[in-house]
Image (tube, rainbow, N blue to C red; front, side, top):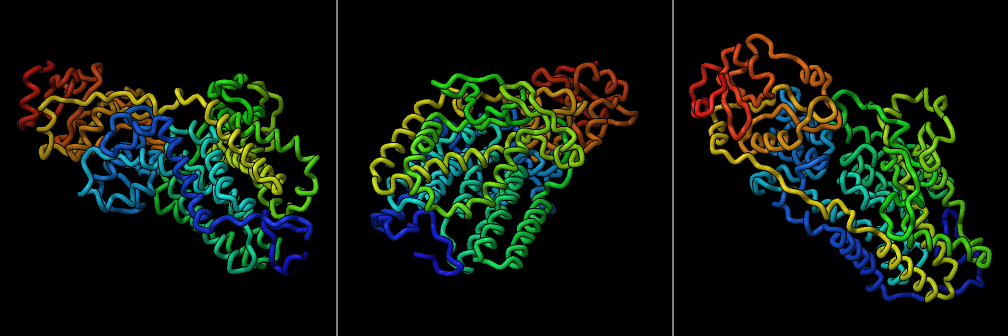
Length: 575
C-alpha cells in the first residue's frame, strides 16, 4: 500500500500488505516508557558515583582540575552585576574579566539560577544535578528513538537504558557541560520519526532549533554537532516533499542565526579569540569505536596517542554485541530490512560520516600510529580547525547512530517475534553494564579542598576590593598552583571581592604578559591585598608595602594602610 503524498512512512510502519501489524501496547504504559528509561539513566548515574556530587551544598569535590573552572565561573558570576553578555563576570580574572561561557562553565543554568541568588546558600553548585539530568534525558530520548520502530514499552525502556549506558557520555564527567549528549539522540529521533505533513515538519524543526539553543548556551562543541544535524533534518524534510525547499532553507538559516545570536548573548565571543593549538592531537583513532582505553573489564585496550582520549568513542561491549548480531542476521532478514525507508536516513548519514571524518583530524591514526596526512585538505580552514581543535569529539554522533541503529534494526528484523528483540536487548544492557569499569568513574574520586581558615581574612570585607596573586596564576598561561588559586578564589568569592587568577578556556592576551611582568614602580594598589610569590616579596618591600605572613602565605598591602588586616600583618612581618 502506497503512502499518501507528502507522507513518509515511519520505520515501524509496514510497506507491504503481507507484513504483520505490530501488537498495540497500552497507551498509558507507552507514555510511561520514556520516563522509566529516564529513571534507568538516573540509576546508572548513581551507580557511577552520582550520589557523591548531587547534594547542591557540597562543593569541595569540584575544587580540582576543570571542575574548578566550572564552579568558580558560577561563584564569581553570582557576585557580578547583570550585564551583557548575559554570563559576563567582570570580577574574575580582574581587571580584564571573563564570562561563565569562557570558563567552560554552564552559562544556561547559571543565567537561569542567578535571579534566585539571594535564596541559594553560599556554597551551592548545580553541576551534580546537571550531570544527573543529562543521564535522565538520555534515557528519555533514547526510549523515544526506539519508539520509532517498536510500540512495545519493554523495548523502549531497554533501548533507552542501553543508550544511557553508552560509554562516551560517562567518560566525559571531567567536562560536565560536554556530558550533554542527549540532544544528539533527540535529533536522531527527529530525523527518524514519522513526519506526515508540513505542520509536523515545522514542529520538528522548531524542536531542533530549541535543541540548538540549548547546545549554543551550554558548550560550542555541542552546537557544532547539533547545527549540522538540524540542517540535515531540513534537507531530509525537503527531499521527502513534506516541506518546500524555500521553507527548509529559511529554517536552516534561522537555526544558524539563532546559534550565532545565542553565542553572542551568552558571551562566547571574547578572550584571546576562538583558536588554540592541538588540532591533530585531540583526535579520534580509526579504532576508537572498539578501543575501551582501559574502561572495559573484558575488552583489551589498544594503543592510542597521548591526547586521543578526546576522541574516545568506545560503543561498549553490549552495544558491539548487538551490532554484531544485527549484522549477522541481516542476510536472513533481508525482506524486513529492504522495506525500510532508507532514503530518510541519507542526509543524516552523510552529516554524521562527515563529522566522523573530521574527528580523525589531519593526522589519521590507527592504534596511535599515523597512517595518513590530510594537512593539505585542512590548511585553508585553519581558523575553524583551531577553534574546534578537539576534533575527536565529533565522533559522538556516529557512536549514537550506531548504537541506536543497532537497536532499531534488530527490533525491525524481529518484528514478528518480539521476544527475540527483548532477549537480545536484555543481554546487551546486562553486558554493557557489567563490562563498564565503574570504579574508574571520576565521580568515585571526589577529593577534599583546603579552605583558608585564619580569622584575618574576614577583615578584608569592606576594607579592600580586590584579592590578587602576584604574579597572576592562570591555567595554561603561566605558573599555576591549583590548591592556592582555588583557596584564594574561594576567599575572594565569599567576601565579595575580585580575583585576578583562575581557570578559563579562553583568556585576554594581556594576561599572558602580566604573568611575567615585574612589579612596576608605584604598582601597589591601595584597594588590593596581594598574595605574593616569595621571590617577588623584595620588590613589594622596595615600594614600601606592608608585608607579613598569613596562614603561611606572604601577603602585602599598601604601606599606608592601617586597617585591621594591615595591622594583622605585623604579627608575622616580612622585612
